Image (cartoon, rainbow, N blue to C red; front, side, top):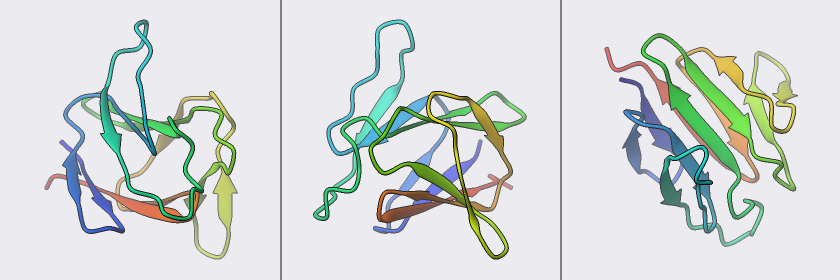
Length: 107
């Protein structure tokens, strides 16, 4: 099960779907755990991003956030399309507003 390393020092296990944001909620038709991430700069949307692990692949969905979700690459950051479930590799850094998190393999 992958681990999420937040830039604030927290470690979250992605053993169930997770919605991150300033004051997140998960819709009844897509249940998930929620994690309230302190964001003094207010660049996170209330429900900013959804992360899921299907046993083989980590999936990330930007939930229509104001400031977007980006996959940091070798030289540039690629924005995720809003509401589109996108596979990401482990050891990738996601930029979520002004915050970052790293998706780590459990191994």
